[in-house]
Length: 204
Image 1 (cartoon, rainbow, N blue to C red):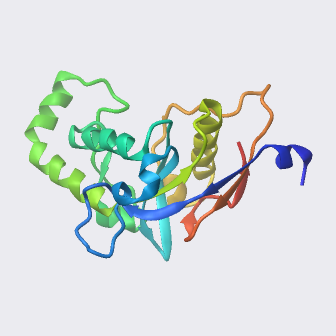
Image 2: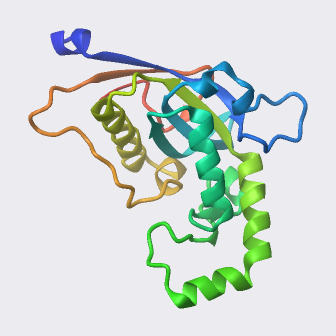
């Protein structure tokens, strides 16, 4: 192992799968907001069950408690901000959008009218998606550049993968990968289950 990898090693010990906060309807599911890790910060993954493992839609980071950040994400979903998928298609590795969201587009008058006209459909689809998401979290010290680089490395690993692991994630995220003058960080991903498309070891 290179010396920088010994000095700058971060282990991502994923905990989960958790159900999205307040979106579990089965007694055997673990809710994120009931877990001890909910009060911590770090990196998280939004996934769905797929082929004996989990298919990643997005990675995110937070320097605030996971529980608080996910409350913000819930509001954004229910307000039409994020992309909303057809759940059966997503679980088969197919990207089928029900609503493409306001996240990457200007909130035009026409788009707002469409959202209002389709509100019930979009709201029901958002709740269905959240109920089917399975969340993984890894506690990481809230050092801004470490978190940003880990997020970018995960997403870029997915983008260059083959098949659904590359197709499902959104493009256009505001990622901040390693700058040329920064020393690489060696990441070791340790998960209790198969996370499709996420290497067990990678640099950030």
